[in-house]
Image (tube, rainbow, N blue to C red; front, side, top):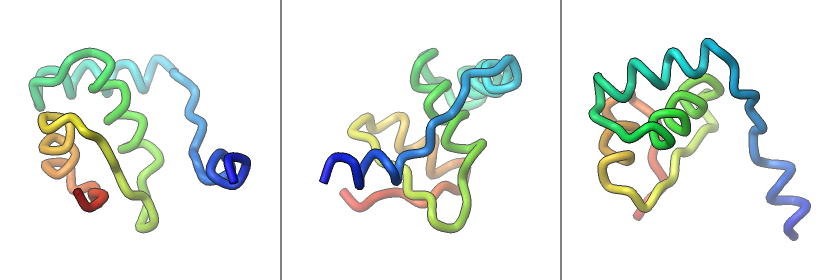
Amino acid sequence: MLDDLIAQVAHIEITERLVRIAGDLTEEQHLRGYDAVRLAAARTVADEDTVFASGDHDLVVAAANLGLTLAPG
């Protein structure tokens, strides 16, 4: 079961481009550093099947602001 879940997770390399996107998101969405990196990564790989999930209210709001599909909850 764990192997099936891991196979569904996108593994994303932290690049200079991703860090720059995250930097912009810290200012635009008022996010903390790691949250901005997570959101930048999600935004980079997002497609019609991508669902963003987080227990952090501010991060969920920022993801919604960017038009990402949110997990129910």
